[in-house]
Length: 40
Image (cartoon, rainbow, N blue to C red; front, top):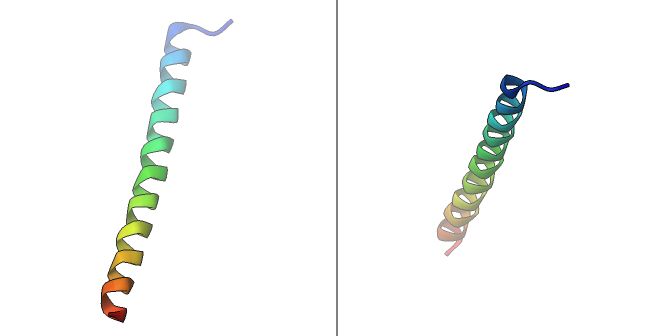
C-alpha cells in the first residue's frame, strides 16, 4: 500500500524531471537561434 507521502513524493519528482527536460529544450532552442544569428 502506498501512503499519501509516497504519492506526493512521486508527483514532486515527476514535476522536477519535467522541469529539467523543459530547461534542456529551452537551452537547445536558444543555442540553435544563436548559431542561426551568427551564420547570417
